[in-house]
Length: 179
Image (cartoon, rainbow, N blue to C red; front, side, top):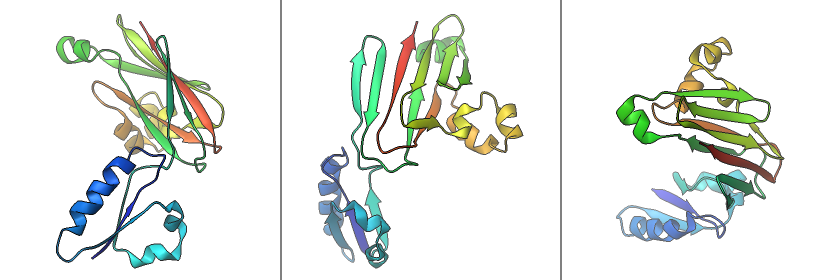
């Protein structure tokens, strides 16, 4: 079996890629190649491999804490790239006191809230949008749009996932904790 381990210098997976390559190379019957050439994913050369192991994206997010706001910026991504963000308000209140999360979406982002506790707000910056399922607020609303399954993969009991899709090579957004 031929395996490609795809790494990259500007991605945290690079630290693991060499270890994975070394481990797999020691296994009988495996031919393993370690590469940093992301272009192989769109090349006919990919056909020579049975398996491709890689981390998501070849970018580095830049988080800049600003009080209770986390600002995130990506550069050099392929438009369509999706970033998952898990928003949580209070795990303790959710697990021990039955606090439930609600979500509200608008043109600028999504707010995940727990009554009487606080909220987390993901606000879009330039070069990105929410996925359709991330804009839905309830299962019924998602179902009416034909997105129930996709929406339910984002809904958790104690957290809510919000997906941001790149519409440009450079994009940014912010996550704010509101208490």
